[in-house]
Length: 255
Length: 275
Image (tube, rainbow over all chains, first blue to last red):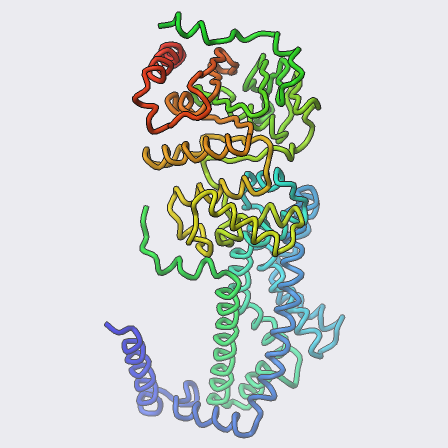
């Protein structure tokens, strides 16, 4: 069975049901309809509002993502290679990790205002923990015998980091990065919903404020599209950086 | 049978201390490990002297301190008492003149064959052009032509061993420490790798300490064989293997001297197996 055709069939069935039941069966005020959402989406594209608002969200998400990921990788490497420091900082890190990061938003508004900075910092905080924890686990999982063998070759700490620790932790890093994409959007969108007059979160909030259901759905569609796009970018970078993994999937499993 | 053995074996004793010409010396070495606060002795009273260019095999049941011996030569950990002397100096810290090879080949999965062999050369700071020339030589030496761009996951067990051997030889360590390197290979392949190892170590005049639990392998490869036994372990027998430098491992099975030696060592080892 062709998976693509199967998926297309489900998709068509779902939207046809939605379209046909909107009106006769369910009040369109609550569910709108695919055609109304499509036309609203088209308006957003034509008027340029989608790109101006979407652009802001993209900038916030990407900036927050990169900031959080780079700090997360750096701290993960540092603590992974320094057990004492990791033990000392453990209670602090666990406390902040346990906190739902969205709860920090009011504090960040007080510190950084309601501009783009606050969303970037909120996104970065969320991404940091996911990437940090995965990088840390990856560094801890590095084969110690492997490191000893390199030490016998005369390797110093920087050789070990660049030749063994980082490359072997990178799979874990990417797991963290892939997990982070939807969470990065949470940071940006929640930030915009709470305090903003720009971005897809604002577009969503604004449409809801006007009881414009089609507008709400159109904004959600835009957010989904953005999330999928970011996910695809991370995956592409992953296969580029880990060519040795590429053909593993093609090989037949054997034990 | 044991009469023949006595003629070629040397008793374990203190006369090794005086031999200053030897490359590696163990002087009354013991090693204990602390596991969960309890100290456990792994080996004791090890006295040993190995000359440069010697191929010494180490046999004995698991857990009697064979690998501990290698780790102490490599300086990965220090003896609890006694002294390990390498080239006239006590080993302290990582001993960069040794190279280590274990049962698992420890190739870096994200580097192809060339990249893996390049690791020690990169650490030494060799330029890329020099590296490529050296790597080409090594690939030829171990017979991996045509697999330069393959990743370890695409290689067979034997080819991975060859790659690991090439990497080991790349930084030209004086002493090769081998901890059951061929244990996971099938019989034919193991014999081919043994032949390669003997050929290369003779040609490059390497000192080799080769740990195995396979008595036949110990006799086939060594100039000398150390038998470990007991927990904590120590050397219970130190036997010369006078089969010559240019021995042919494939033909060895037909050599009566080989069978005699294996038989004698078996007789010696069997009591320790029943413990």
